[in-house]
Image (cartoon, rainbow, N blue to C red):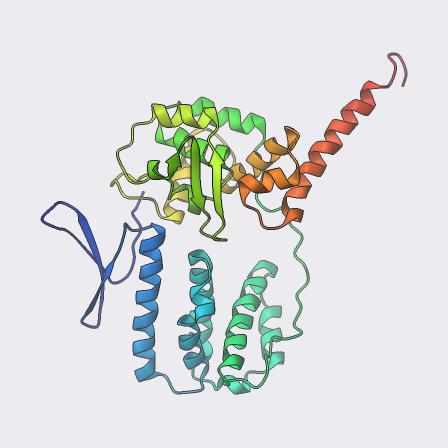
Amino acid sequence: MTRIRLAYIHEFIDRTGAPRHYFRRFGKRIALPGLPGSEEFMDAYQRALASQYVAVSENRTKPDTVSAAIAGYFTSLSFRSLALRTQAERRLILERFRKQHGDKRIATLPQAFIVSMLNKMRPFAAQGWLKALRALAQFAVAEKMLAADPTLGIKLPRVKSNGFHTWDEIEIARYEEAHAIGTKARLAFALLLYTAQRRSDVIRMGRQHVHKGSLTVVQQKTRTPLKLPMHPALLAVLDATPNNHLTFLVSKSGQPYAANDFSEQFRAWCNDAGLPKACTAHGLRKAACRRLAESGCSASEIMSISGHKSLAEVQRYVAEAEQERMARNAMARIPNGRV
């Protein structure tokens, strides 16, 4: 598995044996804290990248163009307040848009053009593009670059999807049979299943986050702080797995995983267990919610662990568990011999 590659990063080992990382571009050097893939490192990297991008844009970009608006948006508080993953997704979309239309005046951006462009995309892609363009337009309106938001009133049809596959108990057992306690593969699995957290949070967990039997988490996506009582099964796996690093999970080079690298490695572990591609790291978060619901937990209790912001997101697990429970109770009332 390859290590995360980031542009303009210079890495070396100092006299004390500690790794040092700098962002270097156009003769300027910016020190980056933490290790590649960690929240503080990636946050500092994004800020450095944005500042350098604007420096170049100020020299090369004409005012009041789409390119100038995008450059300004990347340094705005609204953009910098987004989760790092969302920042990366929006940057990718808007950079593609800038490459195609950056020289055009943003004030002349018509709604009909945006609608025509979105209609040529697949549903999920169109949803992502509309969110990115709407955020850009709202920034441009606030900066007086646009008189009105051209995305206002654009509505896309809802995309019906059950989302990520929820692991069932057979799939969970198959993974556990393939990866014994004490292996990194089992540790990753246990952290996902017994904390109900996203991969972006699991890869940042370390022993410094454990205190008096609870694991402290600040969710990267929502900034929600959580204190999670540690399940005995997770404690058993942690005690049996050697670890001398800042995070529980590290790559072969001893560095914390980047999110995509971890997904690739977890996919390999699932393949070793003979599991289908539908089984993903996020599916274990859903499996944890399912288990909690089947154990009789309320939606609010599940949310206190998973950190979901919307009651509707977890209510489905509770409804499904209650339906199955009531169906079994109803069937048990039918006298023997009756059809």
